[in-house]
Length: 235
Ligand code: DER
Image (cartoon, rainbow, N blue to C red):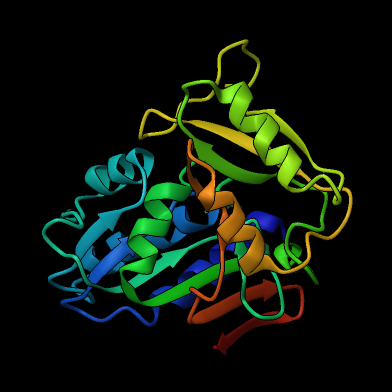
């Protein structure tokens, strides 16, 4: 099975938990895309009715519009029944790294407002410790004096051998700009960053930081699709 087929299996499994009448947080990324497609398919088949979607990015908004899923926002629905989204990394406590697709702020706003947050991944996303993979830990920052903020983020995690990089639009010299008009610094750690809550608080205390990609103690259900099948685990 290809990675995308596994993503699709996890996404379809998650949509089995969607009930008619729900207000749904619609995630962003290649895994969540399958969930949004499946929701629209079940609506067309008359199996799901009265669904309202709260998109976590302009990209997901556009996908949902093209599929005819009615949309609303957090101002109208400050409490959401269920959110379904992918992740870049998942640890054994269901802590996540998200944001390599650049949508972490709206994802975190929607998913912290959701009564249930179902994470859908293929097995390649499972790690022992988040932030230890050497892959990017995204931090959304304001563009103003981004070098200053980058340096302060690196200093925070000096012991972990942290290097920060301004995310660029692929293949260009232009900084990536989020749906919210901000920049993203991708942090790379050589060593484990230790206590995640402490790391999260330290990052958020820096003036100039908007949000980071550690989603701690937020997921309520984890669906993993692997070669041996699909598992559903509740927190
Ligand atoms: O950027 C994001 O937060 C995405 O949800 C990411 O975490 C998962 O993207 P993928 O489903 O394309 O791997």
